[in-house]
Length: 324
Image (cartoon, rainbow, N blue to C red; front, side):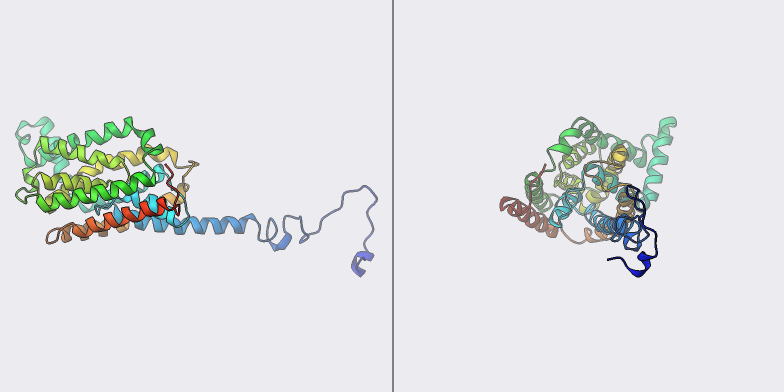
């Protein structure tokens, strides 16, 4: 039945297209917003907010776990799965790690400037070649070679096969035990000034193990350094310095894969997560360096074993999909 208003409107001829009025279902403004029932604009805003929140959470997670010997890549793989967010992907993980490495650059800026200056001088002035800082520059370069070579050679395998939660849970436990044993039996007779080229290469090989999520870059390097007799502060400091070239290089290498990647969060959420990881990471560095001067790595060992066991249990019972 037509309303009184409609009765005064002329009826369009048969076969002529019906003109939809503003606000009717099917119009661009149905429901008062473009698209009807809230429209795609509102839904897009909701999705953007969710992605922003997730990015902040993952940034905090990355900042907290990158420098602690508990594997940031494992946490960025496990916790999104627990929360139902899915795997953020290897590219997202690599790029967000740039934030924490920028925190290393800022925190150790005086050390890095001193090392870089001495190393550059040693290239042209023989008198500088025996300087401790110039030698440290070479140690970082040589120690970075294993992870660079293996990272490029095994890129596809790392992204496809090594992200299984079975592997991650196992490496969390195994490297947790290794860290505990190394810290227990390792002597405390060497400082960072005792570093040698051979030791740097060995520590670089240990760092390369962290290409497998769950190992932990700092955890593997610290474990090897403790077995070589370096004290906790020296082991931790060198682990942080050694990671700079590898992590920044990996992040820059993965940057083109962020927009539109299969598992990518997108450019803006990734940038947000990177900034958050930088801020949280800086605080984590300062805390850990103070902590290891007086305490052991035992709490991290216990945490790794517990998280690894929980992960394997959840995958084994079907609560989490192994993926990979």
